[in-house]
Length: 623
Picture 1 (cartoon, one colour):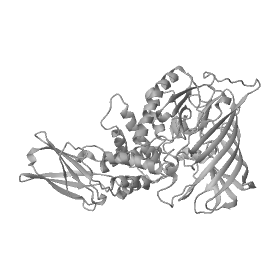
Picture 2 (cartoon, helix red, strand yellow; picture 1 turned 60 degrees about the vertical axis):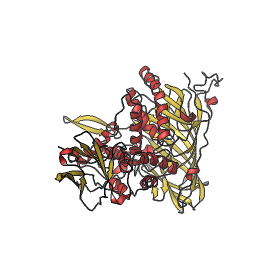
Picture 3 (cartoon, rainbow, N blue to C red; picture 1 turned 120 degrees about the vertical axis):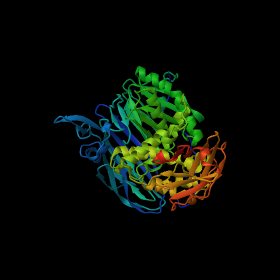
Picture 4 (cartoon, rainbow, N blue to C red; picture 1 turned 90 degrees about the vertical axis):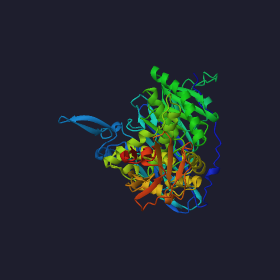
């Protein structure tokens, strides 16, 4: 078994940073950090130098940093949210009996001073001049010594003292599977400033948003630990971990107790790492000469499952490359750590002691985030459906592609979950900020499920081939940028030629639902008249399949007028008739079938099942 960590740095093609519009801009940061971890008390000290490029037309008088660790303190906003939300995350609460009743209690509330997380900032300077830095919860608010003019750079330096919290959510120490250090959201991280302004959101529960840049990080830690995470290890010969098997001659000085790991991560918007004394470490060659790293605990069952996982993830990465675009780095790490699974730059931290099926599902989803969030860096705090939903879509397709028994529609379960949310009456528009959903379950279904249906339903709206082309076009045009909801819509419009503003607005910005029905089928001499009705407020083009008693079939297509588009026949083997378009304002629509009613066996609205019609009992007519 080899434990070799890649020595290489990839030169990425960042030509895509030239936006389609000359008015597009995005900020840039270059981090240099030196941090020393005390594994006895889980405290660390660091120095950070950050070169900030203001590529906007604004003069900046303040900047903001995220101090995520501060969320893991009694009385924090994250703690308060666990008290107020109706269905708190089960990983973040304990169940206790009070007066004979089971009550959920915030785990953060009970943290002791040596168990909390914190980041304390000192000695903040801008270009060597002291600037005023004030900590407000999980945000550091900095009043600059000098304004940053448009198209100029400035250098910030600071010292930070941190404490790794007891593992509550994503980051922390000594998680449920015994991983000692899950170092995510661990450093002072510059908040994003874009065309909307500053995104200095407090850390309450959800997702993140960051500035594109390069990271150069030195981590000094006891020599017994093995590390993995974002970036490429630059000094593997000095570290020696795993290189003894490769014949590298490593002679540690007898008194050496600490090692410094030097990582470089080019053009990313976050940096995470994990460390444990008991990590196994394998490297498997993936598509396009990418090294896939697997770091997992040295337990017999864990080893067995992770060994089986390795070739599976080679296949999944190849699937994503072919269906989205090539993974642009030369390394990716699957690391047992954190809780559940969470995406980070060039890596994921995920639980690893479960079943192979569960580990594979998590690994597939988190790897998918390398495209939808860590290359296509949408604001997952404001638009969680763009990264979680799109990742759910491609990961569901990937799992079905390699399943022993494939299913015709691997996305069917997503539609059922969406219908349950609509029927619950608890749905909120997808424009809702991720932190401000009333309950966790509606957030999850809206983000992961309804976000996935945004793409799968586009299959129905513009056609399977056009959707596939849209995803590739979206990746090509917006990689290493911060795409917005309008950008995926425009990609689909450019590919298909359809007008799709109605689709983006109704599906993501309102609670309008799709509901069409077959109202009545009547005899009309030797022909048949079919009367349809639009019951829901969201319009759609309509596919109908007519099955006759003699076993033949015929399809009919009703374009939606406001699309100004005619979809290709999704069932080329079946004769299709294109009818006149249906306007939104008209709630009823009649058309004629050129055969008598007695010859008709069945009429179905949307035989594909890809249109999210919330009441399908009226979608089928049978004789």
